[in-house]
Length: 169
Image (cartoon, rainbow, N blue to C red; front, side, top):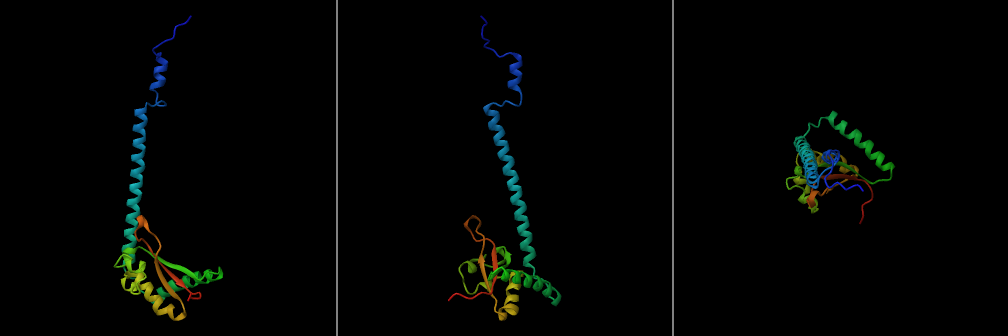
């Protein structure tokens, strides 16, 4: 009768030491390293997103020179988008989205439907409001603003919506 070996032979030892087999401690270390790598990647992604957001805020805080040519460049695509929306049976269209940092109160007045919300606008959003007021309001378009994103439960981006349908009374 053959006796059972209580010690693994050398070949079995090599297989257990091979990287295909991990001890519980090795597996925990591996999991920790993987989680740290994912967290680093996530933080790097968030850092890039925040930098892009800050760059956008900086660009949109600077008003553009509204020459007649530039105004035409803005209004032509807008007219096309409005026509296409109307053909789809829609009565409103989001025409601008911007970070709430471009409002002096970070969107509080917009969120609370304060009638003085336009006074809080700065930069290009202010120009967009003035463009509506001076060019589109008399043509029967209404403009509404609302917080369209709530990161972490706090007001985020603002959307401007042009409306042309019947008003609810």
